[in-house]
Amino acid sequence: MSIGELRAALDAVAGLAAEARGHAAAAAEQLGEAVGALTELAERSGETLPVVELGKAREEVDVLVTTLNAAAELVADLGARL
Image 1: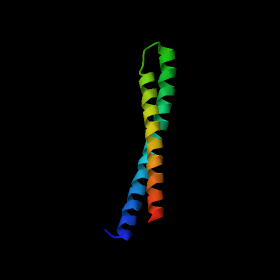
Image 2: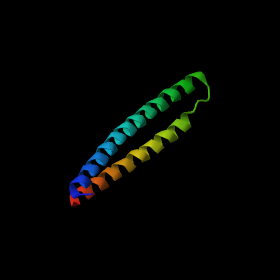
Image 3: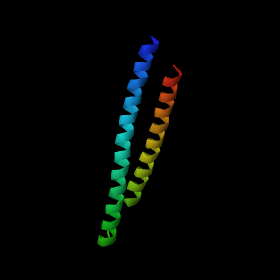
């Protein structure tokens, strides 16, 4: 594999990481909105709804976003050193 091919591969990985980060960030936002809506609904209805579980899912997705950010930085750093 040539340096040019490696750079092209790193660019592709960086693009995929950015796309994944965008999707994960959108999912985290939507989970946060769902938590708010279910919390309000649970208070009004008195029903037990999976608010805690959705909150934990949001936290896990936030960790994923952080991990994807770190991966993107590592890929960019590697590309810069080539």
